[in-house]
Amino acid sequence: MKKLRALVLMHESLVPPASMEGYTETEILEWKTEFDVVNTLKELGHTVLPLGLCDDLGVLRRANEEFKPHIHFNLLEEFHGVGVYDHHVVSYLELMKQHYTGCNPRGLLLSHDKSLAKKVLSFHRIRTPGFFVVARGKKVRKPVAFEYPLLVKSVSEDASLGITESSVVYDDDQLTERVLGIHQQTDTDALVETFIQGRELYVGLIGNRRVQVLPIWEMVFKNAAPGSHLIATARVKWDPDHQKKLGVETEQAQGLDPAVERQIISICKRTYKALSLSGYARIDLRLQDDGTVYVIEANPNPNLSFGEDFAESAEKNGLSYEKLLTKIVSLGLNYQAQWRKNQ
Image 1: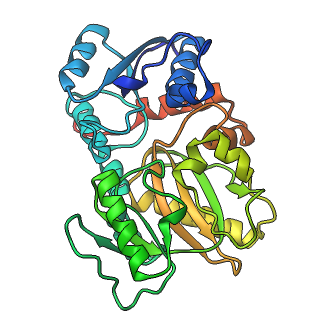
Image 2: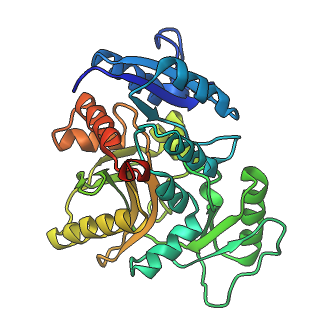
């Protein structure tokens, strides 16, 4: 690949320092993805400009005019402090006829609204847990058709924000308490879904029209108490001490029946297409003991940190971190946005 000018988009609070030296593990976790991407692109010979954004697109417009990037490497997860607004920034890039990495606006919109995504998946006969939504300010009422246990989470927040050990509820009082907690903590509606007991699987996919499926990954809890509900809470994902306590590790899934593995791959490809995803994404699934597979949610533009799930599964497929970022950039340069089709 020729050397490019890459404008790396990120939240203004996550612009990384030049070096990790002198920072704690907890501090590094905040901006590790941004650090890894920026420095790896530089090592590949590209001219890289990290750009912090918060609530002013004028910053992006001026950077485009002055830096004239070949590609925008999109690491944004929110805009104006709202998680579902990141697709507006990508829409702006398309209106400005700019190339960018990762998912297109439609895919971001569909996937980040978890209730809408589940409706789309249900239409395509892709199995996902039954659900209902409790809007902010509305009284909590469980529909008669639903039975406990239920899982309560935000309808739109990512990274397990708001998910705790108490998110699995067993009665009306716990349901009400947890729904109100989600409303207050995340300022979003609450998504309540049937809790699916089973193995926690992740599948990475890369591509636009033609999709490459990465090896199936699994989160395991090696020190968890027998019979406990194993869910990816915010602490499980982001608290190193809590991870060590529970023995949380992610690794290539072992012992899958070949027929189940083929089914998972097919389901993930169908999900990717149904939600109009592009660039790269991770599909989160639950696998029950009887082989039944449920799609929990789709995550466009997942965590790209070196050594994390997505990069590790890519490595198993022969894609080093450098090759992974190069492929993501290439997909961004070649994505057929509508403005390109109309030229």
